Image (cartoon, rainbow, N blue to C red):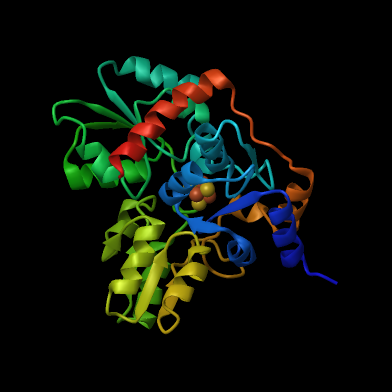
Length: 309
Ligand code: SF4
């Protein structure tokens, strides 16, 4: 009797499907994916895909981005309820009002937002390229940055740019406890703290390196230290540990006690291996983006991809 992973791989071949998975997916899903990456890597990969079906193992806005880039392909998401607190913190009607209140501003949005928000934007960015994108805008031009205020504050601290920030955030990256982090660092005094820029300022101030998930993986590979405390969603530890099997990786602790004492994204973890199988079998739930929104949202995504080459 074939196991679930074997049946998924068989179905994938039969249906000429490709599986793109985010670093925050559970380990079993990462292991059967054709490509595992961060938002930028996944968007770039989605553009190159030569398959009839893209199964996106991630959250809704990521699958939407894949659909915006691949209108003729079927894009499916194992669980349609896999949303994102950050994307949900930016409703399109309120954001449109915010833009109208700040005329003459360039609108830069972090990729963690809905297709409607992207359609209202001038350029999209990810945590890998946010600094580069902001610095590509002429200095005298004021900027609206949305939806993540923590990433926005970090960019302002690095660039000194005049940016109006949308008041959104990620529940997972705001769940880290500074007190507990200090305690863990006392237990591992030689460990280097690394953090994702969606984390709050007081957490970022403790970090020796701040970067995207892909940037953090590169950092632990190239840094000579052997111990790291990692402040981002705990799913990244799977890929990271594969890259540096001899190094010690400690998840940064969350405020609330939970079983693993680390931060996990409940939305990302809605996808399971069984749901991946069912989704491939039934080719649903399918992601649909209305064509008028898709065309408008494509422009700022393409600008980002062009600037990221
Ligand atoms: S980790 Fe945060 S930003 Fe990423 S999908 Fe989950 S809620 Fe959204």
